[in-house]
Image 1 (cartoon, rainbow, N blue to C red):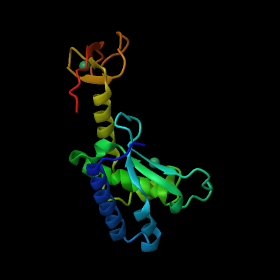
Image 2 (image 1 turned 135 degrees about the horizontal axis):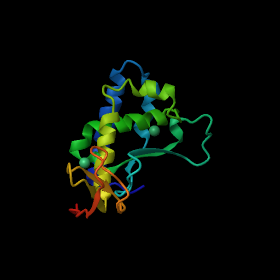
Image 3 (image 1 turned 90 degrees about the horizontal axis):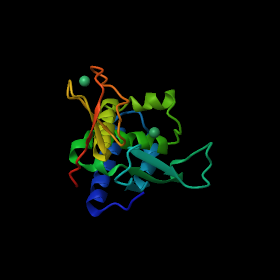
Length: 180
Ligand SMILES: [Zn+2]
Ligand SMILES: [Zn+2]
């Protein structure tokens, strides 16, 4: 977890209100059930996190078989979700984390059903966000010299991989990062 900046704190607060308001209009959640969500502190993941888009952390010692919203210590979102470009997906991720905070521990059928109440499916945008993070952290691009497809990766391919589209053996090109 990283301490959010003033700007990130504002963005997180706004996100919280939009998501909770949306949950109220779903006609699914009882008001008193979702009210405690307001009190959960929101923070950000480390900037170089690539595996996770959001995480709900429960207090140590919380009863794992009966998790309560009050047991949530913090929900952390990836800081890049707070950029305007990712606002739609950020709302979906926070809704997803709120489902965990409401005591749904696992991504089981019940969870997926609840998730599907959200006005749009986050799976496509989730894949795009993963791609975006991967590109940012990639040291190498595996490039197809036939169709010009690029595969951002942390390691060299060393001639061991072929293009998914056209089967040409990929070549390694250093990925120059713009810093931001
Ligand atoms: Zn989850
Ligand atoms: Zn190719």
